[in-house]
Structures are given as structure tokens and as C-alpha cells.
Length: 112
Length: 113
Image 1 (cartoon, chains in turn brown, orange):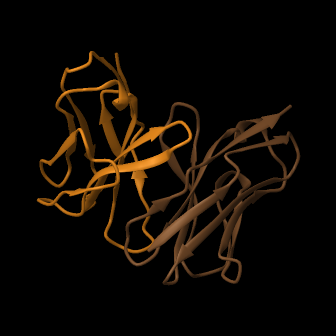
Image 2: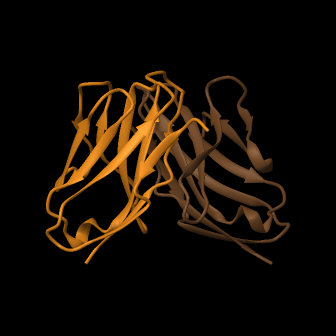
């Protein structure tokens, strides 16, 4: 069985501040991990994914995530928030099969 | 552009009416999915089709039916719409490869009054 927990349904940061969105997973086998972003009134777009190569994964728009097996975490970070980063972010895990389990999402607000 | 196409983008139904949401992908993916998204609930899987000719229930299948018409198309039908089915519906597709991920459509915003 696999599951994902995203800590914080809403996160607010100031423009230029560090963005940290938390994701913890549960998996009985080595997981594949994903972050998707959803801008208002749009579908979900792949931001980045971890597939057992490098533990630090770089994605689009300056985002990156680090896979930490000991902490069962895959937190998403960006050094400096931009207004255009305001969106909802979903973490997802694929473990025993190709099918994904999604977290409930974290809505990021960026304050000017 | 290659991807997942959903129609319609918006729909308003009266309680008891029926409708079909259409989804087509042109990436030759084997697997397709229907999700609904509601505030605070994240994405919930309604039905999925692992391959052409097969369909399976997801987390919230009640009130819905699906048809995998061919490898490209996967439709979702509401036989008798209810206000509780007001939601945003997303179709997605993937390959049957671990780590491949999903490609999503842009969604259908459905309101049942």
C-alpha cells in the first residue's frame, strides 16, 4: 500500500522568500515520487519527478525536491518565491505499480 | 500539441439530467483515469482503465459509468446528475511503466443545479 501526506493545506510566503512545501510518503517498496502544479482553472502539470537516480531533483521554474529515504520525505523547495508561483501543488507516489496516489494538495499564496 | 483533450470545458446540468464527459489522448497510452477535484478533498479517483477493454472502480464510483471506447478515448457518464456531483473533472493518461507519471487534461467544470 502507498500513501502521501502533504503537511499544510495552505502556505503563504512573501515574494522573494524561500518556498518549502512538505510531502511525506508511505511505501513498502522503493517509490517513484512526483510533484505536480495546478494553476487556477487549469489542469495538473508535472513539475518534477524522482525515479531512483539522483536524490536531488530539479524541475521547472526553479523548483527542486530532495528524496530522503530515512525521513520518507520528498519536500519541494524554491529559494525565492515569485508571484507567478501562486498555485496548488500536489505530491504523488507510485510504488508497487505505475498507478499514482496523490496527496490532498497545498495551496501556495505569494504575498507581494 | 500532443496531450489529453477533454470536452466540454464547462457544463451546467439540472438535477436528474444525464451527460457524458469526453476524453481523448493522442500519446498511445494504455491507461486512462477519471478524477474529480473538490475543495479540500484533493483528487479522488472515480474510475480507471488499465488498458483497452478493461475498466475498474476507483475511490468514488457511485453515480458514474465509464466506457473505454478504444485506446484513445475514455468517457465518463452521469446517468442522473445530483448536486453532489458538482465538481471539476479531470481525465489523465499514462503508460504502464513505473515512474512514467500521468498527463492530465485541462478539466471539465460541472455544476448541477
